[in-house]
Image 1: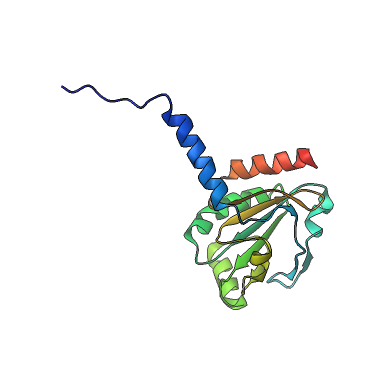
Image 2: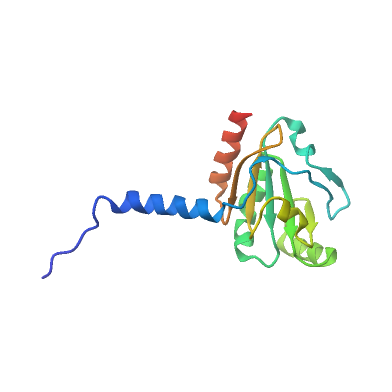
Length: 167
């Protein structure tokens, strides 16, 4: 019988380095620094300005998603859970008309206020190339972290907690 080949000691550290390098490359276009102005009206008609979520003196999560995105659907529960404890701003990117978006929200039981970005103008100001994407914004309006792709609830909570420490 041929001896079983084992991975060298270097495999796991190398895998971790490759993972974080790929994540950094993927998120390279996401903006940093001060969050761009965001003035919008949610689908339910409520006016919104970016400073509003910070009145509670806590960091906020800005969540970009799309109705056609399966990863966004998988992440929806994570973001909804975060919204119980932190301010969350939800932006639907290129997801159809307001009525189509309302229908989708109702079908998915999405409870967060939704701001439509039909032409991608808001997403472009944040450097988005795809969804889902999350920005963690501290109480001063500074982006403390940004990630595109799936994020776990606990990963988001950790990022928000760290942003609260930095504020």
